[in-house]
Image (cartoon, rainbow, N blue to C red):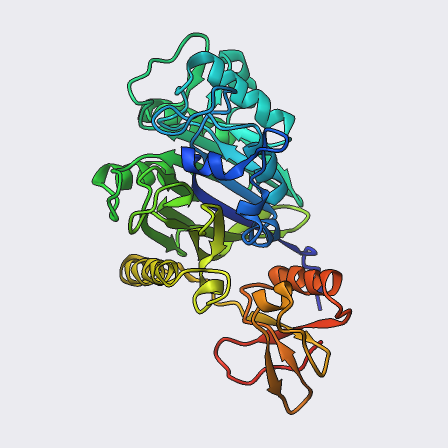
Length: 429
């Protein structure tokens, strides 16, 4: 009998998270201003969404402003404070694409300073370049994480008619150039090639024929992921599992000052890569693709917060007043209706939700932190106790449990899993 030894296999995973338009209108800048020290702080804006961003191995977003310094301004010629980059990094963003119609809002100085600020805050960036030498050595951008190598490309349809000042470069959508760049990406022998476009028609919920043609071109040239921004509203997502391709035509607004219906939120696209390696070869596939909806909430003090929308769907404590809750539910209904009709194999994340169990017979319901998470007394077969509102992910639950134990008299809390498709909770663990 002849025995054959199969090559040892090693299976690894990498999670990617993609964000839509990161904007900074004047109302957002004013909300982040701190009069005491004449500085800016955006950390409160991202506090609710940060655990979701940090849970991914690599988080990539579209920076649709310049960091050109003072005078700061919103639309139509954006220049945001450097604190925006700092707080995006702290919230969990790793990479920003910079080729969009606002790349040249402050001309050559703005383009170059934006790249300098991003580098200073250890954010990778691509799409715009100081000169041709920088592009030649840094493009396509290679991202290495957990044994995976990614190639990222980025292009925009235009720059609002503002000409590029030599020697700067803004990657414009040029199919001849894209084919050349895709050839360079293939030569990098990455596990996956990603193309992030700034394209499409503003405020339209369906991709144009041009967007679809560009996506097909990229897939034909070796890309596995195509992600889009610019319309400021959501457009469909498609996952062709047989071809190992995912396209998200528009992720809408990640954060902005826009409040009209459809424009007050967006989606984050989560893609999980699976790589099976042997001593002879490696194969990488897309093993999961789903989305989270996120909504931008402006409270009565005109402060902005990016909320994981599903986690706050039934909230009546944080989101005030009633009109705001109605706007959130309208955004969820509109987004789910669009995606349920037009998405292909990309569904809303169906992971279990969580609650925090507070181990106490009585509770100080007037305490502001306790009141925020709306605990209720519930008798369980396993244990009786106080349980917070449902939380979207375990990272958020951990943060809430930590906040409770550090800022209230209660020093013991546990995380309880709430399966979405079952009404019975598991016991605290």
